Length: 185
Image (cartoon, rainbow, N blue to C red; front, top):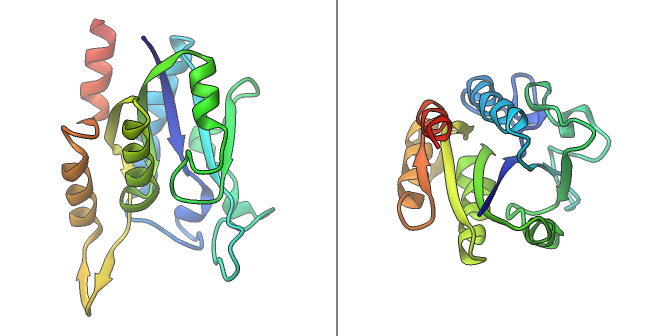
């Protein structure tokens, strides 16, 4: 069974002074960078997922803007795959599934942004497509949400979503736990 890394939407608009700043994106990107470096050292497949907004009225990840660029913490190397998407689910109308199948990938390690949107949608879709998923929870970030005039802090949003994914859709773990387990195998 072959394992690949998916780095989802770690793009400049989610960082300080971006158009959709998240809670603690720098810390999440630092953790994602550690996972990325491990995959590079082991010469395992890496897929960078980049969201480009094409919907009318979009306010971030706009085509040909600095905010849409992949953040320097996880910049792709020339030989690493970049998959462009336009929806939260990284598989929707992309060739990601075909690329993974062509490489014999059956397991995915997933990091990225936003936990409550693109991470959730992609993990659920990946599981439905038959992939075994590991979600690196501290290598993900999200933001405060509100509903009916109640604000739900980003930390609570994040923990609610990773808790919902844990067990059925993914094995949720920290960067440290993943690296310790991966180096033992």
